[in-house]
Figure 1 (cartoon, one colour):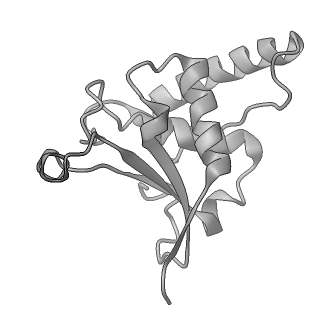
Figure 2 (cartoon, helix red, strand yellow; figure 1 turned 90 degrees about the vertical axis):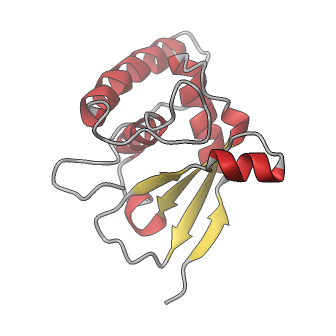
Length: 151
C-alpha cells in the first residue's frame, strides 16, 4: 500500500493555538507544518515529527522547518482531549534553538513534560473559554503513551 500525505491546515491552526497558549516562544508556528498520512504501516504510532539537517538547510538556503506527521488511522480516532497532548509531545522534540534538529527521548521526560504542559493548556483554555475568548475547548493525550511505541 502506498502512503499518502495530505496537508492538515486544521492541525496547523491547532499547533499555532497551543504554541501561543503555552508561550512556547522558541517555536515559530509558521514554520511548523502538519500533514496527515494514510496507509502508514505503523500501527502503534500516533504521530511523529520530522526535522531538517543543518547541511540541507544551508544547501538550499532555507530557514529551519518542522513537519508533524499525524497517522490518520491512529490520531483521528483519539478523543479530542487526547489530541493536544500528542501535539505537545511532538512540539517538545523541537529544541530551544529551533535549528531544524530534534531532541531525542533521552534528553527529557517527554511523557511527564507533555502531561504538565497539557494541564497548563487546559487551565488556560478553560479560563479563556469562561471569559469568552475561545469558542472551542482544548484537548489531551501524549503522542507516546507508555504502552505504545514512539511516534
